[in-house]
Amino acid sequence: MLRFYSFTITLLLQNLFFSQSIKNFTVPDSLKNKNFEQLQKAYDKVFRIDNDKAELYANSILLKGKKEKNNTFIYDGYYKIAHTKGLKSENGHPYADSLINITKNVDTKEYPAKAHIIKGILYNYDWKYAEALDHYIDAQKLSKNKNPDQFFYIKKLIGILKTATDENKEALPLFLEYYNYQKQKINTKNKDVKSYIGSIFSVANCYNKDKQYKNALNYIDIGLKECNKFKDYTHYPYFVSGTGIANYYLKNYKIASDNHLKAENSFLKNKDYGNLAITYYFLGKINHDIHKDNIAVNYFIKADSVLAFSKEFYPITRDGYEVLIDYYKKTGDKEKQLKYIDKLFYADSIINNSKQYLSKEIYRKYDTPILLQKKEDLINDLNNKNYILYWCLGGGFVILLALLFMFLKNKKKVREYEQQAELLLRSSIKPTDIVQQISVSKVEEIKEDNPVLQKPKTTVPNNILVEIKSQLEIFEANKEFLQKNITVDGLAKDLGTNRDYLSKTVNDLKGKNFSQYMNELRINYIIEELKTNKVLRKHTISAIAEDIGFNNSESFSNAFKKITGTLPSYYIKLLQSQNFENEDFV
Image (cartoon, rainbow, N blue to C red; front, top):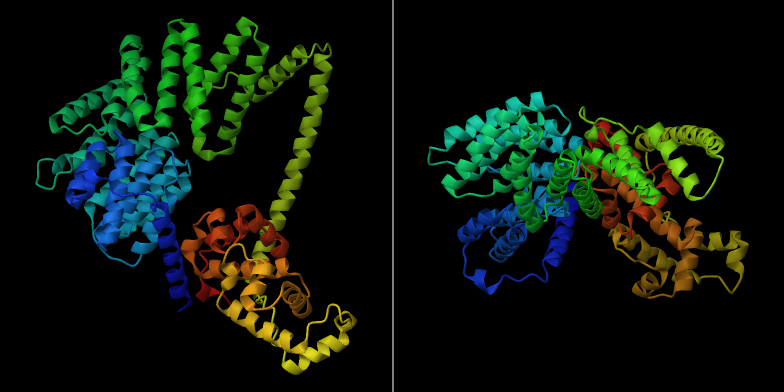
């Protein structure tokens, strides 16, 4: 029953959120008389070509579905909005989360597997490959022996994950299997043109990543012909970009440059900043190789600007910073050298700290020790200092000691958090109930035993104390503490009393102030809720904080740590690692 109410409350909150998210959206006059089939065709026509328009059609599908209470189109609307937002480097996760929640108990050919597919795709866009794989596996289990289209499509998605971690040889059979499946369908009444052409691109892209450039160009040629044959240009700019990449490595610089310039316009229009940055990077590489250094530098700077704007990073672009550092070293611009050394440090910090960025192709001409030395030299030079060697050695030694100290301290703190999480998981949580089953007769005893309560200035009359106690029991039982922005003044007003009486009652009966009382109610609630709600564990810390009334993830984490001695992330990680369910808890 608790799970049912939890699911119902979550669903109501999400419906409220998404009704607000499209509150200002109205279906344009030109689309009001369009039926769902027409809207879907319009969406398919512009998807990946003009994603702003695609999102407009997706919103129209969702709004019409809600007005007509048509679940099929509500599901489709959420899916399409999530996907278009992901392609534009916007947050599509709330829509995917809603789709998972509202379809988890349905059993159709597409759902709930399709909800997990889009969630995995969004995680892939976020570089969170482990999380993406979890959802793909869930989707594969749900679609097996039920929907072969989904089953083979997931093989392609897993192949994409493998190419992201440079496992290209392992990915290729998955792409070829998906391509052969779509190729067999293309001459049947169940053909799926978009998926068929997409399967060709996947094979071509994998050949490019595996340095089999001639094979890549063969499949790109097939893909371009099929785009024209079926008049479906969804993947057209990606084939053009792939042509530019393959020809660059084959040293056909003119062809490579023309294709990248052609792809640039499509990526700009579609706000596909990731592929746009890679396009600028290759235009920089082409001009650098043909010794047009000034043009090359401009493109590398463009690539960096796009990456900084989109807050993304692609390992393949790393050596562009090396070219910039060398260029400004030759021109004597030490400030620019220092700027791009810092950029290279940042790039390496991402590569070193994230498994998903590991790449066998990264050649590190500027490894960390050399960069540290160059950076220190430049800083000293700019400040007219003459003690470069001593400062570098001394500074390096201090940095190493500081890093070692921070590492050991952090390691100890992490272990403490893990131990506290284990203790929290295995302990029987005593609810923070401010009203501790105190009888009316006991109220007078509390007041008699506590000298502070005997002072007329601060004493709460017995009848008011009992009344507030009763109202707080209802407040807690109805879980009203999960609302946001609850203040002692506001709650006192709701309870028909004043802030002093409410504050003093909380202090008398629990021995803590109002803020501590609210935090403990919320934290103890979420501790137990996370044990029973697997879906909730997959939410972000920020989303969980929002759900239980905190203004932000920082205030939630601080309160959780203060009360439990650990952080919510460690507690959730432990629950997930043990596949914890409430019925297993003793």
